[in-house]
Image (cartoon, rainbow over all chains, first blue to last red; front, side, top):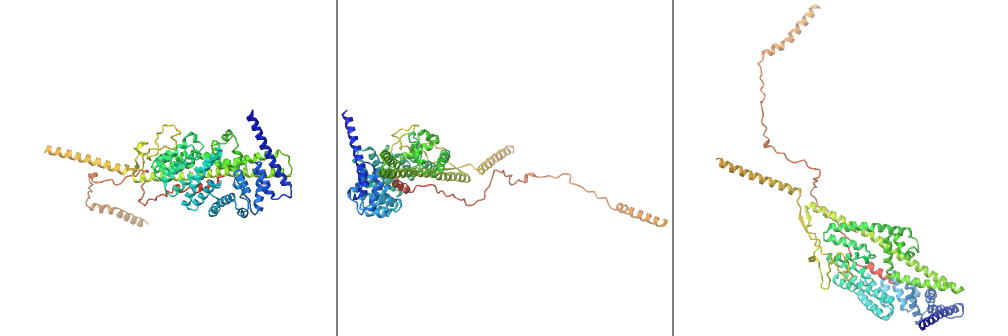
Length: 508
Length: 88
């Protein structure tokens, strides 16, 4: 009973303080003599948890003020966390540059990164102090900017710092959602280190970094493909095939990656197992052609819509399944991304605000807040709609692009088969299907025999044991057969002659 | 008239009986044909053969090697950029 009373009391205090803040904001708005009006309204609205309503007032203050104070910096932090940094992307650069604000330096850095001006991005990100709450994101962005500028050493250093800052952020918070966000950020930095090592062809070090990603991580299924590429580069095609076969695990059904099919075909091709490679190529056409068509029909029909794809993520599993099972799986994949979750979280906050505002008595101030919040909601819907649409377009283009790559493998195999016929040779075919002796293992790599079942602890540690079929052996040609017949006839003639000679000698 | 007819008759009779008279003057020629001839097939040989349609022969020429520029992963720059753009 006491507990219930405490909760009711707390709710009452929160509601009254929120209402109080909104009331104060209204008073500031209606008072023509109030000093630093926009700044004060921003504070009051943030205090009352009206973040999206506060955005236009905060922007007005940034544009008009010559200097911002530390309290406003804290307000900016709240807005960035709740609504995302892109809310300030439309503020003129001169206005953003005028203020000595770490939060605005981050906005500038990100804005220049979007514009592919990586040098400028680094310049502003460097101004952010080491103890700032945005350090994990800042280091990741700087690392990426350095990498894209070709300075992998500086990139590597930034990623290492990103890892440390993100790890500290994980242990500093008790909120599960925030913990998960920083854990993903930490893993992203680690993956970027592995990618840099991959680019500089330091494959062992790249693999070491990838191996640090835990199997329970959200990022782990995506890492499998990248690990497979490392093994492919190390000419360990059996391990490549083993890593890729993990995607057949039923629970990884939504993690379908067309590139994994290509890498499988390439690995078989390298092992000269042409029939296997060709069957992967055929399988790709069978599986991805209907998927590509289903996706194309959805994309073409709703290409110009600003909201269709956003609302598609709200449809029930049955409805999505009815459209095409592949669309359902793709939507599941999109809904698992960080971008979608963060943006959708912001959309929900904005919606909650709008619902509260629409229940209030509508004077000029409330009407303006409703209008501004609705505009912010529409922006979020458009932004998410664009993200989903872009994701789908990239996916379909990848499917089509990779099908051309698979076609090239097919052509190459046909050409190689023809060469063998001309040379009168064939590939050695009397090989066992797989053997442990062909499995390469490092000291810390596990070995599990696959018996038709996937076990969680085995996932990602599979390896095929196929022997390369690239050895060529001479094949009997028409000429060979002709020679053999002639030699046989010669042999017969000689024996007959000998027989006749011996008979003649006897008769004599 | 009767005279001229008699002259033509005598002339015709003389010209037609002359070759027969000349032939009777020549010796009789006896033509002897070969009674049999021997063909020795053992010394002949058949060269070449009828080529079956499937036996396609191609002139020796330099083989054209197909370019094998298969898909290759060299870097992850687009993914690195995308990760930052989709950060928040």
